[in-house]
Length: 174
Image 1: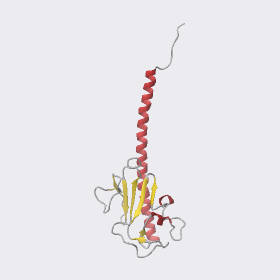
Image 2: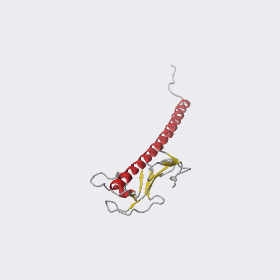
Image 3: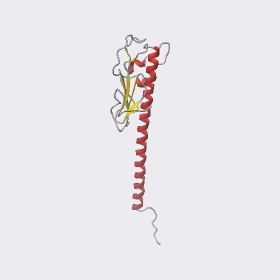
Image 4: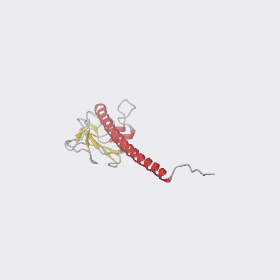
């Protein structure tokens, strides 16, 4: 009787494992790029939300002025049960969300408001909001900023947010 051997050789198995490894490394790179893009899109959306919250706050509660930090915007407007900003952006003066760190501060040349807001908090007549990656290159490759009164979002391709007054090397995002 002749004995027949069937199956794969060691070389064939090693080739299959190598091909799977190459495909997996390409997939991981794509997933990391997609995560960076998603984090940056979330940061841009968060800055838009902060801007909208500041505009509503200014019009309804602060007499044309703005909040001094993010925690002030967790309060409700008069006669509304909905806060100016959602809780995920108002947990502290510096808030982390989707791989970015967000801050709200007085802009250069701004002054304290002459009156307090409807919740007895101090106000200011200008603000700058920034979003910076918590781990540059891992959670994002760009930093963002916006300020009153234009509310235009600026970007830099660094771990440092665009500086006031906005201009080169910062670029207008939207």
